[in-house]
Length: 257
Length: 209
Image 1 (cartoon, rainbow over the protein chains, first blue to last red):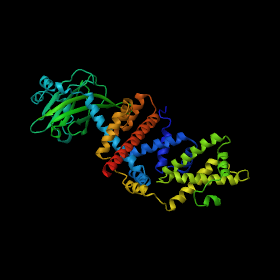
Image 2: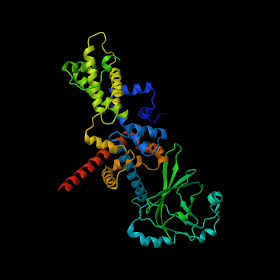
Image 3: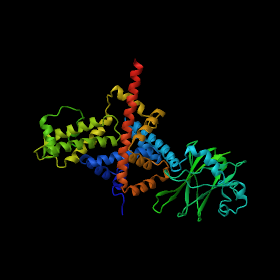
Image 4: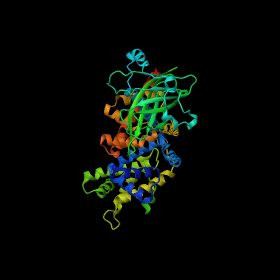
């Protein structure tokens, strides 16, 4: 079943704007534009989409050039593209902050929580006495050692409105090396997971290698040299069968030297 | 194409009978005809803008309809009456667009300044403008704010699936989401540039004292 019945029309209007329509399609569209206000609105929507694709570089190089040549001199083009970039920037900022909200950090509790959770944090030495089955497969990847130099268990964060969350501290090993972040899951339902790491200090979001695991815990290898002191959020996402991306869990932690 | 369609596009005052002929050709009901005229006019503007016309899409649309009106008047009641009127409007529009591209234009000085600064199609908002935008997005109704955040998820490879997921969660078709996103985005843009213009105006007044 087609879940987007007007998707074809939208695609045709995008082709029209990109000068990719054949004469028959062009005629059909222009005749409709002359008699149908809804078609005009649909063209407006297609134009907005085109602007979005242009500013995010989602068009082919040839299409990008067509758009630039056709519309660069239109009086509202610069305003449209600048606003589209601005909206994307602000949305990105808010989404990053949103990930922080999913993982609240009540400031007043920080010192108490830091002490309270110190016991929960598993540091360095522990890992040397534990078998690392899941690391074996990665041993040859990008010079990563078979065993991490330290392992940290992160507690899943509660959603907004939940009880205060303990703060996990990840201490950077010296010298730097590969560390392991262990992520407990309520249910491990997906064959693989995508991992996003967001730094509150730099506002940067990094996509890590996807991870797989069959047990109730996932292990994510991270190069400690890439981490800086400060707060981080790690978000686990998984792909549904239809391609949609679902957020599975979030974990917060603080990196210290 | 006859001599009318080769005649240069220039605006002259339409005579009442030419105007009548145009409306009659559009519909026998006067009110319906007036609405059809407005739709045809905005359709022409959309076509010209989609073709990359810069500042004069409205002017060329009006010229096109004037020419069509004269032609309708001349041919009304004759054996050469126009059969497919909308197709005729389109044919005249195409001719007019081609002519318009060839002729030099007088551009008001303000527009010329705008046009000369518009060529940098890759310009960005400065930090002040971004702050305004942050404020405007923060003032959106919560529902719209949630929507725009979900729609504009910044992670490009996930965008399409993100929107599919959004469509599923909100029980809307992808088309309805596009329309909604377009409306919110346009409203934000208009508010933003209005706000920036007001600030600029305020600065000018303040600076002129």
